[in-house]
Length: 233
Image (cartoon, rainbow, N blue to C red; front, top):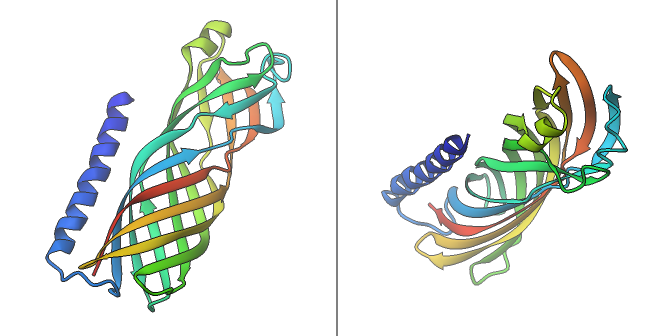
């Protein structure tokens, strides 16, 4: 799975390079219709348990009183289309990796679910405020689909509970609010700073054989903070 993460990051970088290489053949324009961005993105999820749906092994609350998801920094790319100088739609691409640990109970501090890989597919409609001097703050909102590509029980969880065979996190729809600023540098190039707040959850299922031993509803609700460069034409 580590190779998968590296491959995903490499594909994101290759996609960004391909986009920018294609854009380089177009004349840069700070008021153009299309904008590409290459960003470093911090994904800061919550991961707390909201509801216990099934608990055959009696893990909650004695062993696992609550959970927390790890933070991650990952490369992302975005493409944006401007319908008017002030109204646009934007989508982002990237893969983020996390793990979930117990934050309370007898297993506090123990990693429970490892190698979680998520695509936070997002489409936002944005309104840009033209302040002049190449500075354009914006706000946006739209739907998101968190696609869980992979996850597995940690070695610590399998050691503590040998009956555990696998885990499964559900892919879920949610919503995102967005705010940020684009700063034009000239010839279509610019800097971009962006913040998104998501509201999205997931069902975390722990299996013992084919039995769903533990099912919890968890909120992810991450902050996603990005900074990078842009090219518009």
